[in-house]
Length: 230
Image 1 (cartoon, rainbow, N blue to C red):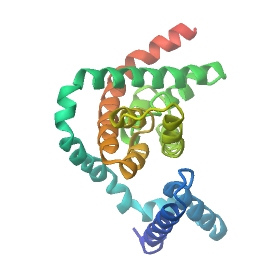
Image 2: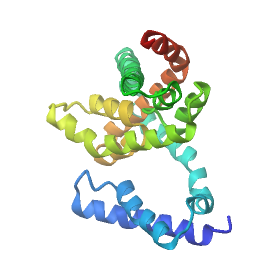
Image 3: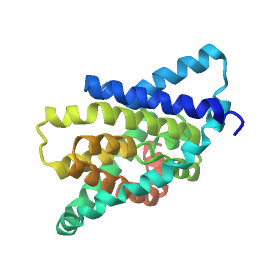
Image 4: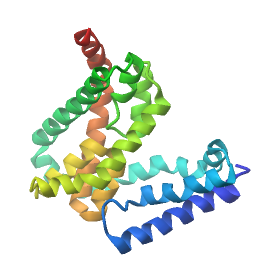
């Protein structure tokens, strides 16, 4: 924690500046996470500070990630009446979405010549980071790269997810939320919650269900894909 005196303030200030800029411009591509990264990364490069020191100094913020995810249960609880009424549809959507995410990512990686290790690393890209890293490790992938894949999927979903939903004229809030949570986990869920409370609730529901489905099915599905690919 010796580097906390500079890494923590740097992270917090960069994020709040990014939030202010995003609120002022109000364009989806001006995502607070992307803007904060655009502030922090050049500073680390210009000052020749290693990322390991920055990460260690910001460990307090990383420890708050799990409580933050648990906090998503509140909007979920408030939509419980709708969830009970449509639980079969919700489970079906999340199941199909999870299978599609795993198969598509793995198949594209293998088609482009990736090794089984890299394919296993990419497979859990559409679930939240702790689950993705655990699944990747169980498949003999590289958990650290899986975390980066999760970040990329989350940022893309947060930036372009609602643009695509609007393009295809998807207006139902629960459908939009399930789609975002299915494809872009916590980052997409945070964006969905900013836009609409109900969307955020269903996105957090999809985040949880897809994480469970992926962790259960990935160890079974990956060997089948590898056998089929030959």
